[in-house]
Amino acid sequence: MQSTIKTLSIALLLGVCFFGTSCATVLGGKVTTCQAVKPKEGTEPRQVRIGYLIVDVLFGLVPIGVDFLTNAIYKPCPETAPKSVPEKSK
Image 1 (cartoon, one colour):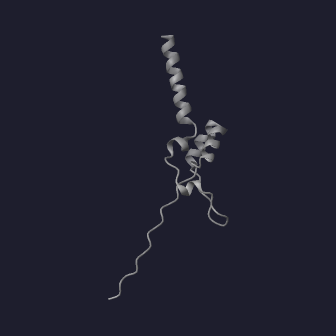
Image 2 (image 1 turned 120 degrees about the vertical axis):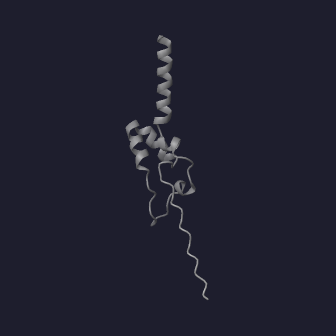
Image 3 (image 1 turned 45 degrees about the vertical axis):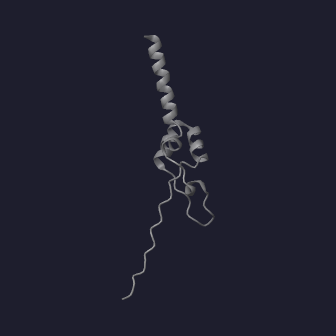
């Protein structure tokens, strides 16, 4: 009984460590080129995923560092709207 509780506790702790740290890196999906490239001066800065940042703050400095170093903390860029096609004149 004692060893079962110990094994279950270790498994639960490892699960929390894996899923609780660096949330954007683990759960945020593939990092796009837009997220990975630092914007040029004079252009809009990248937006941070607030939910992932809050969870990272709750778990400490290491998750914040990992998410910022992998650029997973940034929101993916919105898809550009298709250009309107001019109507043909009759």
